[in-house]
Image (cartoon, rainbow, N blue to C red):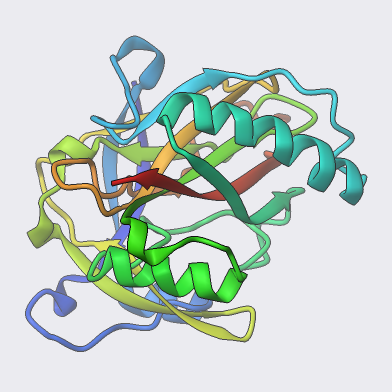
Length: 259
């Protein structure tokens, strides 16, 4: 276990219907608040994507991550099969991927500096069907489908020792803890999820996630009774000064299930 600082939505937003903007360092500082927390070693816990909201999965790849075509034609195909096996989805679609090479000063390309979920939770089915239309996917609405959205996160080049991700156990989060926020990144306004502080939240991380491992974690769900999301953030875990910055690839996955 270690101690780290995480940023929650500032308490001034607890009793308002207004939606804060968190889109750069200035708005993050204005609308979030730092708190020290105890972060448990996830390797010592029973973690599952459908209960805690996240889990570690072994995955070895020979992908050259500096080769865009190798990533898009090789790596995404590899991990799509892994996601399908672990979720039981009928169809798996990679909607976005991003490689972080270690630029902590860049708000978008660096490491997430506050706790969040990547999707809005207010209308999961509506959000999912909107994305189906945007992506031009051939999915027959009349057949009845459910959707779940997951992320995968895998170290590149070296273990993710500096700037690892921390995850809040989804079983310790209640709907009252969650609010919408607006992220106006990459020229597009998106509504996502940000938590208010709650004492019950329990944090985990993988202190030495290696390049032959990845973390699968939930971001949105239409099936009732399932974990809705897994809140996460990068943290500055105590490491030797010479430890290099984290490099990693993250992929967002839309999973489609026959209802």
